[in-house]
Length: 100
Image (tube, rainbow, N blue to C red; front, side, top):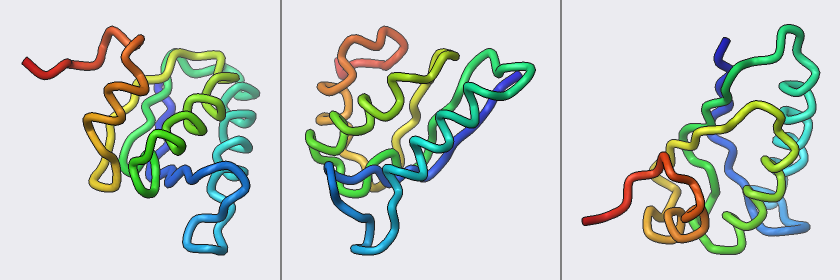
């Protein structure tokens, strides 16, 4: 089974997306929900706008929020993401294609 979470729009610590939407908290709730599913998904696909501005701080927050996920997560960035910063932040993920 595959679970998909999309358009996460993670922002920096203690910030709200668009100054009013608690996207980081919502993603934390989604992670808990996925971990509590029975049967639990085999993988999670995180797609779309993973962050709101594509900053290193947001990718650090994204990693922190997704770290409790029990199933492996595969990320597909969206147009709000910065590919170079994303690849640097997740350089330990062997499934991500590197330039060159």
